[in-house]
Length: 483
Image 1 (cartoon, rainbow, N blue to C red):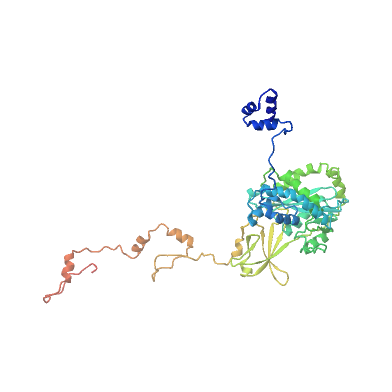
Image 2: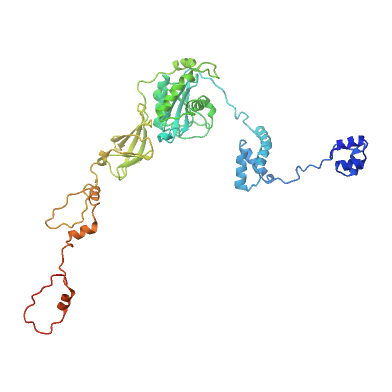
């Protein structure tokens, strides 16, 4: 109803009935709203808020318990679990609104009862030149899928003082590749930092321990660090902020080097990083406010010198020799000499990195040794397969094994004077008899094509008739055909 229109018509002298007919309502309604103490707006109905049952009401306590266990749990995940496990039929928006209203309250309660109010915070630190570097892996996915490589990984080392980066790409994160990347990084920087910060990766840590306890290092990691003279600094579990310098570098390389480009080999990826590196080193870093290359001069000058001889880490595995003189390693098969092994024998497989070769895998050589008391006997050396399900075989390893060259076939039974047929390989025998007609050939060899004398049927009837009189003489006629 337009009450303002009521008043304008009434001021013009219209009666209640005329106003009611004009506005389409009852005249009593017009009188009610034209009274001196009448309201200026129509009455509003009572609110229905809270009068209807909510579908989430029976599950609110459950959702609150989930949020107390993990305050960062997303509303979409909560809705998915409610539908799958508790038969919730409500809309996602109801769960989203409830979480938005409940999360601040639960967070305040958890903060009040939290004994460690410093959780989520970290201490910022600065490093003197040459004192520290940080190492991390990056998984780059199928950037070389066109070359048949399923997954590519990026190795990163960043000097903490200057943020001077190093990166190389590999197809494996095994131990030999991991420490080979360290040698390449040391050669790139021209020295060794005083300490290197790592995650709790299995190539550095032998096993995981409880918080606050000393972390046991892998023997190869300890030996490598002792040879090059740096200290291994292992972060606490779930503490990525301890090596934020290299964590950020992983994303920078992914965005500026890999994104939007196509590559055909590991060498192309390494070349792309080498091309981009002067651009990065010429930038002013936002944290220390200096050009990275200028600050890196002081950082590199403080590094420890490289040792005279490198420390080579060879990944070692035990494998069993199959009856076909093959061993399985890394999803591929490698041959061993049949004259030096037996079926079921265990052999030692070592992976030696070869970063000077332009192969697909940086760990390019697989060396196989027999286990002996004096340390082992060399059996074979193969280039490491770049793809899974590959067969790397040296034909000389199968010398002396039956190859089927004495197998032969024939369709004629040998007679006493028939010389034995020369042995023909199975493939050759199949080709030689492929054009013959089997039935015709058999009939010809058994002389089934010999001409036969044809006689009338009366001669056969006469020969079969009983003899009633003594013969005057011998029978002179002979049946020349088969009876």
